[in-house]
Length: 183
Image 1 (tube, one colour):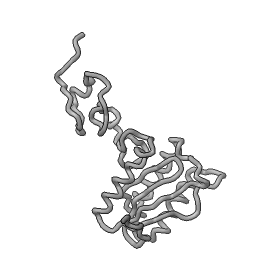
Image 2 (tube, rainbow, N blue to C red):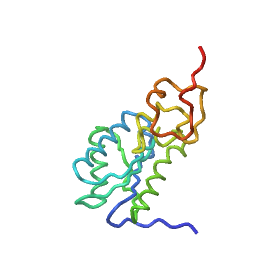
Image 3 (tube, one colour):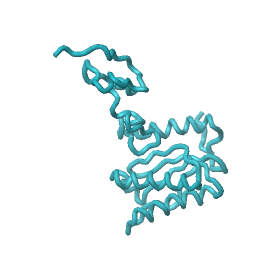
Image 4 (cartoon, rainbow, N blue to C red):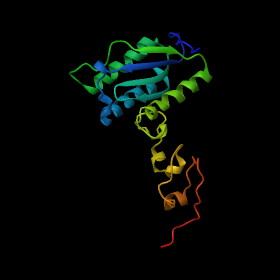
């Protein structure tokens, strides 16, 4: 039997914010980047602890713990702050949000892993680490050989010279860096 979602109570919250009329405004990288900058700004100011985020084309998932304010206030800070920065004449957000409590650190890790896989399941990225608008994103991950990506398949029999000099930290499938193609 599936566990039903629990309503929010103070502490860590899994929050979903949806754009007005589900418009895919975050398909525009500049706008998604602006949202991430806004999210990180208010975290730095101390309004909440930011545990994870994923910006999808028409909605956003965040894992936050409000600091010195209610969840409603923290969400309003995020929504209003982004709307102000975007400076749009059109409505940006649906009214309200969906928020659920995360009971403990074990559940936090489960929800974080679930969130990071959403772009992969939506076919927006081959791996969570490749989705630019997520806290799972790693800039240098895209430079890794495909065999280092979970589920990746090799594109060729050789490993690039850069990867021979600096082997990737994440290494799922073994490659032989000593093997070079004859010229």
